[in-house]
Length: 453
Ligand SMILES: [Zn+2]
Image 1 (cartoon, rainbow, N blue to C red):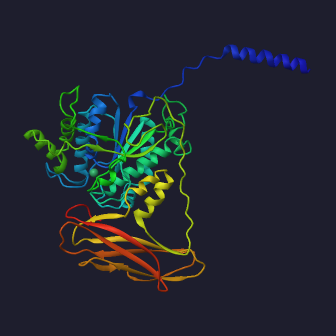
Image 2 (image 1 turned 90 degrees about the horizontal axis):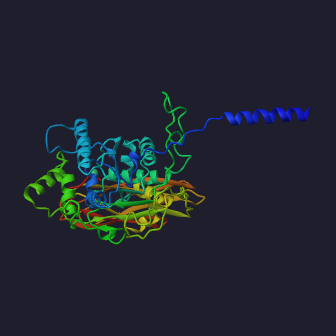
Image 3 (image 1 turned 90 degrees about the vertical axis):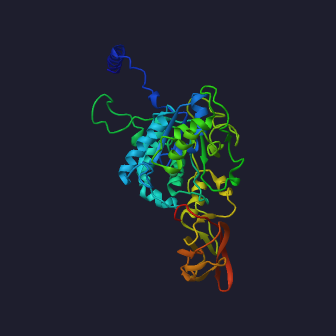
């Protein structure tokens, strides 16, 4: 009986193998969307921060570039007409597409967040619908399979310091670390049941580990960024175009005509032939790399074709706290944990003291957190040491902090109504039973203009 069954089985399997059709080769990702360099920025015109470098990468090195914008640019003034809000966003999307098309860059996407003027990254992440924006960014990293990602620096700096810019940097960093993770947005990487049929509900992308991540910043002072990454001069003449790279960058910028400080400025420069504001170098800050690199080397140094293995990051690891302590909360405490979680801890050393820029007369909001890691409830007294002309609007008080608990405090200082542009220092002190338990020092650049803090 056993011999008989074995014979039947052999006969069956042999016949079946002989009848098997050969499967077609596995489908490869769509090459039309492959990027060497992916730019992740917040607003139409933000890409102009790096176009002086991109001109060389595109025209001389034939790099493929793709761009993701966080918003359509629906906020801000309109230097061309009356169109505002959603209508302005509709115009700026086209300005950005035309500007990038002038460089041959056609793969351009928008995450759909609203412009959120301010300097707090957490507010922008809130209005952008962080989760949905990140899912789309991860999807686009998997689609474009970039070797290098360039994005805004996720750091609170004195300067324009737009919360939207920082949000783009946060989302790009998260996407860099998640696109190769098969457990992150798995619906994006499951093959469709039948790609030629309708109602496919999984996306057929592949996990992708980008190789290098670089940042750029709109800080008002760039001293702390020198030597922290590659620097690209824009005064060289493009061999293929016969004009300096800054001239090519100005041409790209001149499409953003609704924007007075970029598109209009570029148009005037081109009309007058005066490019004194355009010959700036492009300064990048090294973020991370999964291939061989040097901090100031070319962004594509060490990049060879093919995929890289997934490079997991540490993720959040809570630090143990002792006794009573105080820390700067809000975006500052987020960044402290974010940098560690994403293995970009070196960003913490860029600024030795936290800094903010506000206009004279504006209020300075500093969220503080008092921690009590002891086993007893404690009273902690907060007081501010402030320069002449400042006053305390909120925050000076005695705070009862439960055992093993934290007390978040929103402090508010009123800056002097009038001041020459100047750096000033403010300090929040925490004390319990007459003993200092900690202090927070922040440098404030009292400067005119800029975004509300
Ligand atoms: Zn911007």
